[in-house]
Length: 175
Image 1 (cartoon, rainbow, N blue to C red):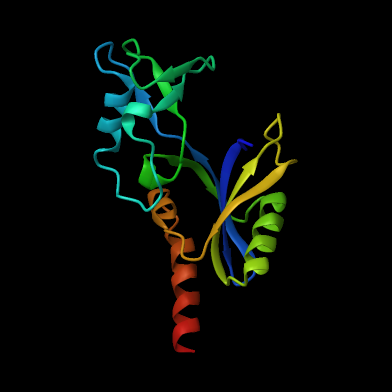
Image 2: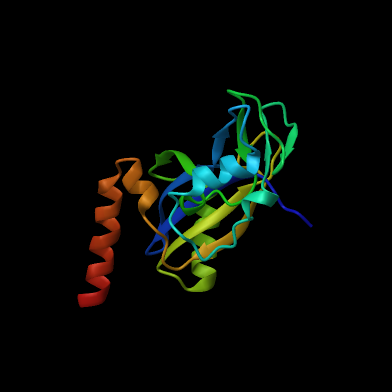
């Protein structure tokens, strides 16, 4: 079954949640000329390649703020903002809302449990909040990354958190 919800990332370091943030999807704005597929291709042109499988732009799907679905061949009106459905990682053109340190308790608990279950001392745990109110009451782990990128922390000016991660990694490597 398709599992969907508001997506979060929890960064876990040495058994505790260091921080968390809500991911946001790639957003494109119609110009009344280009198809959704072309807008997505244009937006992703500068995106870093990823090992994740991204939907080819021709099969791109999006929705407008009313929830109306849009497909790759559709031509959105000028100024219409669309939320692209799919991976919300930075490498796919996504972004994040503010970084929260410490992580909210519910996200911290599920992130820490997932990292512990996998024996990871450093992890990026991706979590869906499936609750209708997006209140962190129905969480589901999507995946856990053993070496998460820190680009989002950098983009949000959280060099303090990056320093904490690197300090811990260097201590682990060199004692």
